[in-house]
Length: 287
Image (tube, rainbow, N blue to C red; front, side):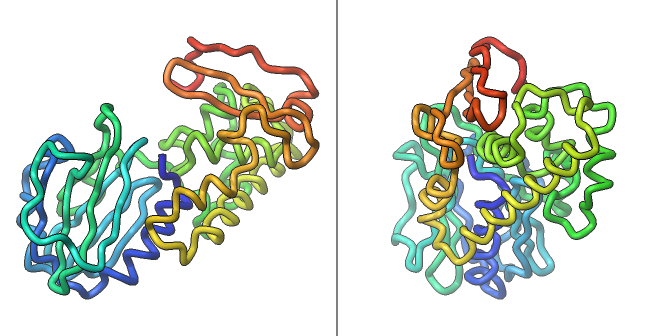
């Protein structure tokens, strides 16, 4: 799933390629991705793009005098930029294509979704806060006003385990499964540690790991073409998705805990005092 760094990189990329360009056609291919109907998709046509925004893991295209196009790429969605869009109308039900946006220049982008679990979501709204997922977002961890004191206040009294707390979009916006693993590895903390149990020193360490991990990932992704962002993300991960490989810090074997629809990775030596965690396949940690 694209998380804050990748969506921020897409925002940068689209800011350069979309701003001041006129949207001439929006073609829905998979109707299931549309989560709103008023205003319609056609309300975007004829308007120039004023700005591109990121809201946590949501990507928003603001038009001048028109509505906003907001999308959440979910687990298997992606954005593909094309300097020259194919001619003709795409055929519904053929392949992963879900939505096409065409510009006056002949360029544009496709939203696609692989697999059978269709969770890609597209909204056309007058205000991004009309999107339920955007309205409930917590603070952005890379915002200038997100300091250590604010982070500590969010965790104060939080009875959940750190892995689940970091992934809660209403607590902190933009962190998902991959970067929560990376943040906890950098902070040398167990994913099962209770957030409320952190000492002041541990809170400071987790805050630094959060900011540093996300900032470094954004910098690695900046300037990377949209089509290469997934590979760039994977190349920068130390433990997530690397079960069985040596930890790049201590050399111990990266372990995994599986759940019903997800998994986490961690280093026992760096994070759990050398003790492997129980594989709670039916755990509700990530619910």
